Length: 353
Length: 173
Image 1 (cartoon, rainbow over the protein chains, first blue to last red):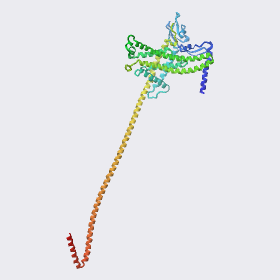
Image 2 (image 1 turned 30 degrees about the vertical axis):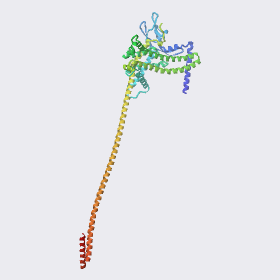
Image 3 (image 1 turned 90 degrees about the vertical axis):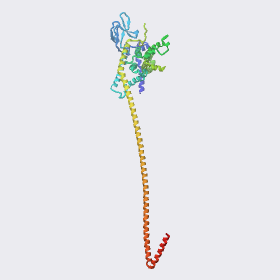
Image 4 (image 1 turned 180 degrees about the vertical axis):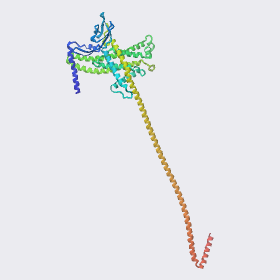
């Protein structure tokens, strides 16, 4: 009985795009899959929810721009944009300002875009989750039972990251100082990734697949590594334990390489997270597009490709849940390892020699 | 003109600004109120569990000691009991031996007394017998003498013979 219902549901889902396709095909335009995918990955000034028969349902998001000419701040939505601003198609539809001499410049744009809204949703979710857990602990002491259910799951996850990742990676002496940052990074990335997999409104925005976000996180980690790095760490960069000709004369080869490494470490973090999450979103979007492509080629193709895509989408979404965790874990772990490496101890070094 | 990268690869000041703000907010809230509560509680619980385990271990150790002690006491009691029994047996044996000795001595003494008595009795009996024999012989002798001395002749004869005999006895002696 259950299986029959599942099969019926799958068939219904498979036939669903028929209507949409019939409605969409009025213009006879070819599907441009790369463009659709990139458009969905991109940031936007409104949160697109659905389209039906040419009408778009979107949640308007506040636009906050400062005019370059007058220095005035404008607070509006995409529909009530002042005349001098326009969405520049050549620059991904970003807001540009037309100056009086006819040139277009990018004004200071602090709009709550889709990505920003998604980030704030994640922030609210995180704060709610952790404050509710913290409240649970408030009127209990260590003699009461360990938490069950949701609080227990959160506690388990926090302690897994804390004990199995941060403690061994950073090292026993310094991990307490960095634990809040690393835990925040982990839960921020993890929650963002997971919410990003929800296809409709409160989720679905491509946040960690946006280079700005990963850049910010990588810079934070870089600061955490280099600001708190000890003397030994800097000595290993500028005066490493190598023969003199490698570090001073004729050229300071090793210090250059080491200095380069200071920047490549966070750069690798940035690119890894960005590429993984972007690719995941892109693959899922591509498989979704394959459904529409199939239906635009005919009913036979439609049904065949639809089934194929549905299976692949299911698989990809499961994979992405795993990737969401793994990428958050990897980012946190590498940050922790790099932070741990910036606190070398002299005697430990000598033992290795 | 400038390189037109996909929008997700284009740096965006607004997004970076909001990201910074959002991240700082979440960082400070979680680092102040979220994680310390959870981690602190878990560490306290861990300490408490360790402490409890240690206490339980100690208690079981103590119990074991008590058991051992109890066993020792039992063992001692058993030994004492055995000792007591042995002592009692010894005492009994000693008493019996003593009693036997005493009995033997008593027996010997009684036998000796009995012998002495018998001897006395014997002596008394012999002397008695002797007295009786003497009396009887005296009476017989009287009777004989009375018969023999009933005639004067006879009297003289008898006196003579007797004198002879006595004289003969004296000679023999």
